[in-house]
Amino acid sequence: MLDYSIMKPEGILVLKPRAPLSKEDFSGLSAAVDSYLADHAKLHGVLIHSREFPGWENFGGFTAHMQFVREHHKKVGRVAVVTDSQIAGMAESLARHFTSAEVRHFPFTDDVKALDWLESP
Image 1 (tube, rainbow, N blue to C red):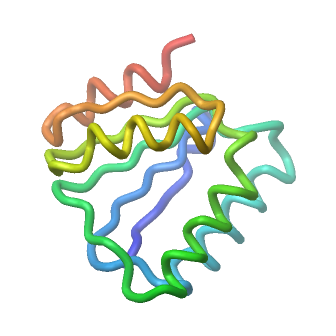
Image 2: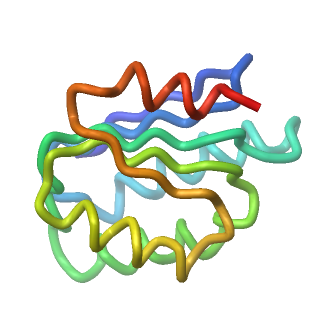
């Protein structure tokens, strides 16, 4: 399950994975992001907030995630990964290969600092 919202004035997508990610999570997310991007050039930032990364429900969830990244990565300025997960450092390094966005890791309790960073010029 993936909770998401777009802070419209700021242009920040907030993602909160709560359970293993499914194909359906990304179809709803893609529709919301595409609707926002129809009126805006890009997302200023993406905040991913989850104590631990929940993984994917199945291979369909993984491929839908990769397709979402492929279709939207050029329209994102910054990504804040806010988590205490052990894979955060690896995810931060790996993300740099898939996006031109500036990617930064923050501890799970530093979501306010992460949001401040995303909102800064």
